[in-house]
Image (cartoon, rainbow, N blue to C red; front, side):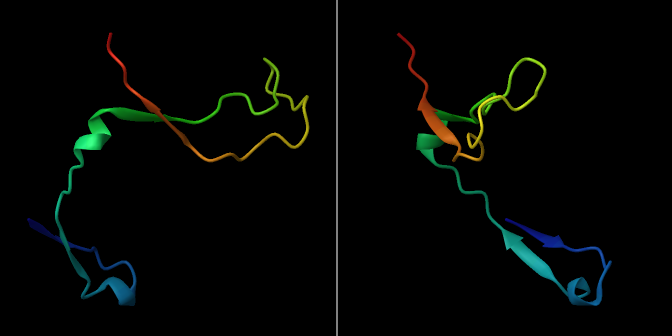
Length: 65
């Protein structure tokens, strides 16, 4: 465990310290996230289908046959 000390860029972070602990989840090795590509845009990046943006990030399983 490491104690992370902030640089004093503002008065509120002058005495700030956070004790960070790395928590690994075994499930994280079996899934990966992807944003949906395009969202109603063509190859030039221009919106062609309206009201198609801003979805939640999808989680897909890693399957190795």
